[in-house]
Length: 272
Image (cartoon, rainbow, N blue to C red; front, side, top):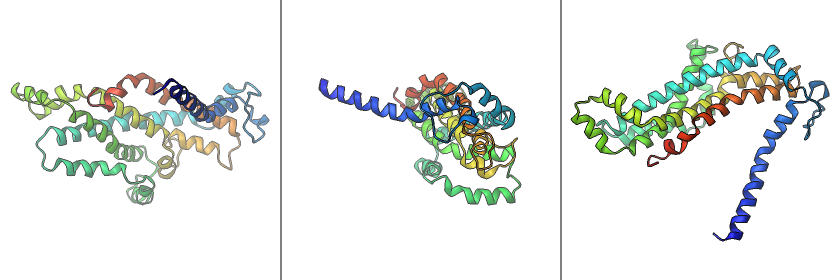
């Protein structure tokens, strides 16, 4: 690539990055605006400094704080359980002598191919019949089930790249399948497990579709569904309060990402 081409590419990437950052910029700027001063049109420059007042309103009157705690429960437990189950399945189809491992791979992975909207109607009907609607364990169940396939895809890809000598050495040492999984392959797959956890944690935290469909109570609804209530036609708090709540609600995923970002390259690339 020539020097001129590199400069053009740098300019194009800079422009694209700035365009991509515009929604985030507008969110931050308008979160500072007083609800009474909001004209209905997003401001490009701060007109007041009411961010903390808006955050306090969102937490005290709109249950955003409670929604964040509930989402933290769903994200940590749901993503953790999904990654562990995915690790078990990955170990089975890549290490253990399972018949037709490719078939079982597609049986599990096909869950990422279907659009999520296809699950809404049967899930709602089934949850209502099984008394799982508007329950925390019902929400956890659907989050674990929906996040297993992609976690399986990531962890299996990493385990496939592990050398066969590792399994052979463990077998010569007298290790059974359980010991081989917990003491050998699980530690060697830490980067893939953490990468999958971050992906699934972020997806569960940002979920709005299933939070709105399968829950209705404030002590059950995740934070994104709570924020959606702030922007409804019957909301009396105003968009700046919703934006301030969204700004705070985005912090956990940012923290988790930066805490584990060094595992991404190794977790997604089996040869890294």
